[in-house]
Image 1: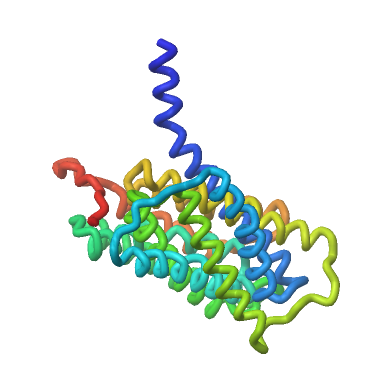
Image 2 (image 1 turned 120 degrees about the horizontal axis):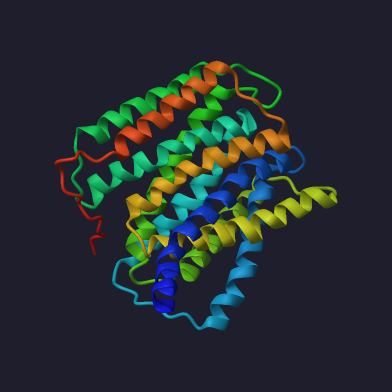
Length: 310
């Protein structure tokens, strides 16, 4: 009996890890919205990646992690880091300066569909018309949310901001597909370290350009939030997700992304006082409806396992 309980708990660990990763990622929308009002975005992202690197490198060295490098893996590792955090954070940072944290978070609901489409194209998976129908419905909801959003103090240009957030989701889908492929040969800790180091270099170079500004002062609470972004969200969120995606199907793991808007809207209401109007709530419902349609399996169809191609 004890063995069965322990086995059940072990089987639940990847899903608990995914849920915690989603909560951490949801809180990043709130934290970024807050610190971007105090610090230059490029500085925030550089500090976040540097802190994550300083946290993860000692863990890698202490654990003595090994990997099974194969010829050509450098391209996938480079693509992993470029997709996320480099391009992903670049798009999302600008998006959060133009739209609200709540609207940006709702757009993350399109990520599972983008991952499914990517798996069809790159992992040779086959899906029925329901997936495509769900994509159309969900994208319609994103367009409604974007076009119908009105400017406000916390969302000066939601049209452009939501569009940039969607581009960030495209990058996020690329990260998830590559992470699934590489998780067969590399530990979650190593992959997280690669992402943190590439992000530090990418945004470090950005700080040397006219677009990067070093802060004159370091206020306490905004600085604490930056440390939280680097140590907890970057290291914890990406570490948990990358570990979990090596244990479960990539499409199933991606479906947990739907928790991010729920967590984010609740946190934005509690911490930032953000509210969505009726039109925006209806657009959100359309986004989630499309996701549900795409995830529903036809009764007569046998489930197709998701596998990564080497």
